[in-house]
Amino acid sequence: MTTKVRLSEEGRFWNPEQFPLVIAGPCSAETEEQVLKTAHQLAQIPSVKAYRAGVWKPRTRPGAFEGMGEKALPWLQKVKQETGLKTAVEVAKPEHVSLALKYDVDILWLGARSVVSPFVVQEIAEALKGSSVTVMIKNPVIPDLNLWVGAIERIYSAGIQNIMAIHRGFHYFEKSRFRNAPMWEIPIELKRIMPQLPIVTDPSHIAGRRELLQEVAQKALDLEMDGLMIESHEDPSCALTDAAQQITPENLAHMLDSLILRQKTGSPDFELLLERLRTEIDKLDGELLQILSKRMEITDEIGAYKRDNNITILQIKRWAGIMQDRLSIGTNLGLDEDFLKDMLKLIHKESILRQTEIFNRNVEEKK
Image 1 (spheres, rainbow, N blue to C red):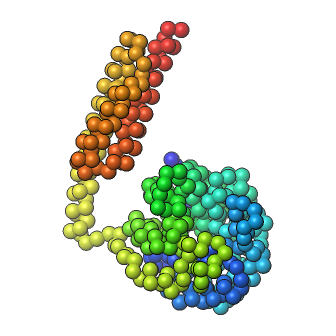
Image 2 (cartoon, helix red, strand yellow; image 1 turned 180 degrees about the horizontal axis):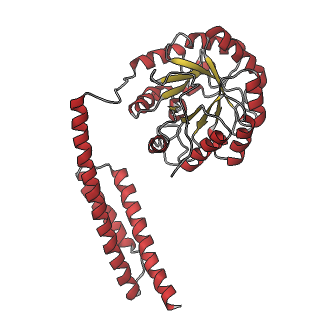
Image 3 (cartoon, rainbow, N blue to C red; image 1 turned 90 degrees about the horizontal axis):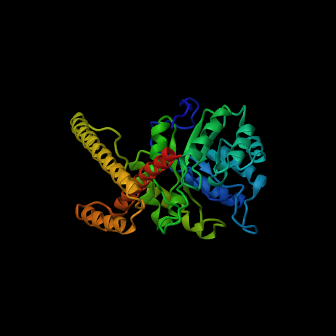
């Protein structure tokens, strides 16, 4: 995957060397008193640079609290005036963009539901043209990196230079202790293809429960994400939305103090050892690829033999036996069972595809 997005650090509202960036605030702006009280408490935490609050809340079903709308935007102006914090709100349509800019909101973010629709993203991008506002783009609810990248590219094409990504986890059907599966491999891949793009992790929406926030936040920092966006309410028990995942500013301060900030680079001796280990991994990866290539060559021979002897491609009993045998061997070697299952399924899928191509070529040759 390639991208033409080229961002600069000029005009950012925080110093990238001041790691990590923390954005905090309530899930929803409910009352002026709640907004200001929470903001003043958060302003006492040095690492908090911006105040987030939901003004328009996209609810799954009608009848739930859908935010205070424009009425809440003057409250955020007061937050800026009284605390000096930057302000951030979610926008889901062009009218939201216009109103947020009218009330001097510093940071706009696109929610996970908006990002799944290129039509919605494009409409928002058009509304943003000519603005110097910072835009944060959450990952889509489904685990699709292309959708995430596409949204970033659309906002960039509108002339927005100050762009950030927000990793808030993905909807996944398998049971998990998290509200949204982190799927760390996706933001890691985004960081690889867009190394200049800051990525902020949203532990609140990943965890769904305040007792898991620190674990997710620490993992994000260990994986060199650039910051955290955490929902904080002056009294979470009274919150109108997502009460279970919000924490008080006081507890947020304690949590941030307990996080371990690891160095991105070490001493010369450390770097030398690390380079030696990486070289060994490179060598092993090469051997793995050669073995995998040889395996596929044998798969092709089996496919040709099945074709010539009029035998079906898929042999269920054989596949079940392979899974059982390889899982037993792999787990005894200390490999994770879920990892092994995923790997074996991918190899089997590729084997079936290759054998299918052999059968199809034979059919085409007979025509």
